[in-house]
Length: 180
Image (cartoon, rainbow, N blue to C red; front, side, top):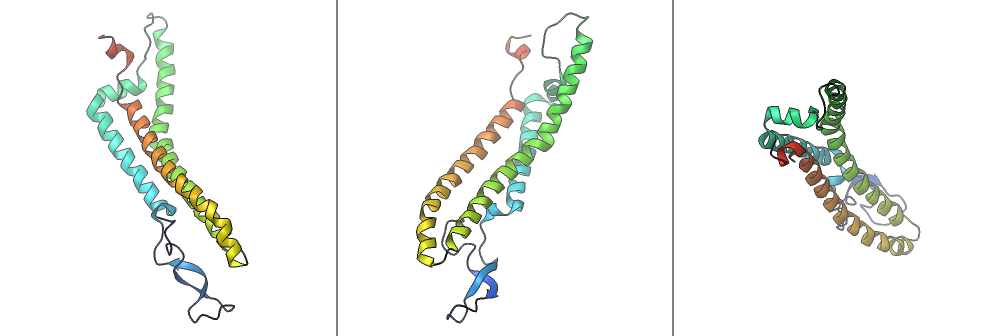
């Protein structure tokens, strides 16, 4: 969306004194159309939808008790003497996993998408402000193609990370696969 002409560049701003055009502005401080992923609200909303849906699917697949066992349960067969220290270790690992599921994964999804798209938009803005204008347009052409590739790649990465994160919550443990 941010590669379309006029998106992010047409709007309200400070009038340009150097231009002979009557309504020319130096920079669109408040654009009429703004690329949606350059705003953290959309990327955080997408990550929140991921979190809610992945929690729903994990609870539906594992059940509440099964999900707790999946996250905190001891996943090794051991003797009764080694079970208590392993239980403490797996509780610590489960707490770390809970921090990952609740905080790290949604923030990583949101900030990764936001940062890459916002950085690309700033790169294009910097190349288009070169003087003379023809030099700015020519120097920005390779970056337009690069940004098109980055946009498709970020959509793919967001989808694959979401699938991987949900897959880790909805996979059977080794004991369930062996029929125990």
